[in-house]
Image 1 (tube, rainbow, N blue to C red):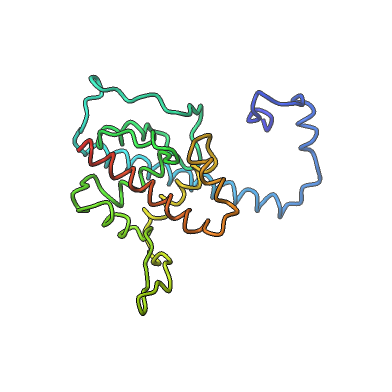
Image 2: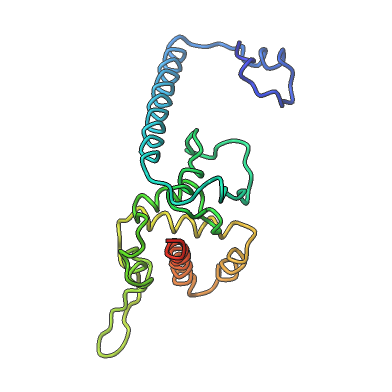
Length: 217
């Protein structure tokens, strides 16, 4: 039975895998393993319930685009299985339907990252008069401390914002992709101003997000 859950692409036969599973299992260890397996099943059940609730909440939003007239474009990177904590339902289509924009076309923005940003920022870009207001709210712009006409510090403000963390993760993802942004960040890796340049690119990702949302509003 244990070999039935092994993926079909394997290097060893079922008999060899079954022989490798034979061993001296102590009763207390088996008990702990059973407890962990039951907890795993409970967590998976709760996660599935959260996914259903999220899907119901997304279904209540009005459509910003007609999927029949403007279907969702193909993703840049086609994946055959969910990545990380990606829900089982089609989250990308839901976000495209309620926003009218495929934000995953922006380098570095994955579907879970877009969900986090939309849940924090919303779908109304008019809340931010300018891009500068948006990046300041995110805490990704320099906070210049000037004394006597001289800039003593230009560090970013300490902001506890899930959207800010999402844009930072997007910048890291873009830095590992095959894109122009990746080459740009790689060229700054060993430069003295890498930290400032990294925050500037995080701000640029946020600018692209808000500009795209404002254009299609």
